[in-house]
Image (cartoon, rainbow over all chains, first blue to last red; front, side, top):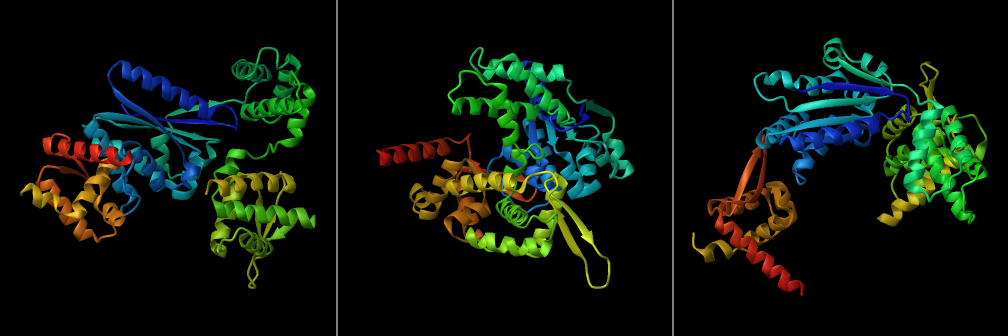
Length: 350
Length: 90
């Protein structure tokens, strides 16, 4: 029986980990019973919220050389079902960052995914969904019939308590560090900081890793609370490094241009035109031709939805409108540094 | 078809080599990799399919070709390519 489950919760509350753990366990259980079940985890944001690209990723699990274009998402969905039918297989699709799929494709795409089974009443129900998102508000944007197909099983993950964070960190400490390398006080401090960041366990784990790195760099046998403090000051808590890493080359270049502008001029807001000019300079530096204004506007909306920048459209007069960009959460210098590292890695790879 | 007729075509040999390496592909992609037009690639693949060396599976409009695993001819061709490529690499 195909199921649809929604997992909601704040950043770092374990939504992805829960879904993946469940996927691994149920796949194992199914294989012991001789059922071909696969769990496939897709981060919709990595596929720019596109149903087509998301499904293509799933199909490529079965047919790695499946052509990349020349057909519609509906055909791809039918292909997926055909593959599953032929192999007598079942799939649980973990759709992480489900918001971006809803925002990009709206009700239609979600409807197609969820109603697929209803078209095949007397056939095996092959596709189950786990939709992972931060809040149910996104689901409210969908039309009523699509919503009704989704909202039956909802798991809401609360933010971690301090003690839970301590437990999670201790577990990681036992996996990654030599005995006694991380004193109790260090774990406690990290748990405190992570708790104040909305109980974000991922942030806590990253802090632990960085504190370990600082201890290593200073040839210390133990990671002291001072190492944690250094880690806190070096980290960019408001954004995840993985968020930046998933951006495309031009998105990174555009963001680099924005961060440089803020670094240089100490202003609270800059206009899209200014950002565009700075981006053109950055493109020249990286020896690539700049993308169009419309594309940059789309990037800006994406940055805004991730929470890196804020974009506000001013003025509704006949003379057109201007967009004010602000960078409220992240020090421009830190952002620039992170982007430089990512871009350098990218250029080394190519 | 006689064996000499099947294997006398450079394009057909290249198609077999590509499919041996990547296991399955659609006609357009094979045509692109060989730098020939769709019709030409499709014609040669049809010949190889008629000889039971290849088989195809249809997904909507997409036709994915691969070696016909049930066919002794296909196995023999794959063996030949294996041995040949292995020797050349030495």
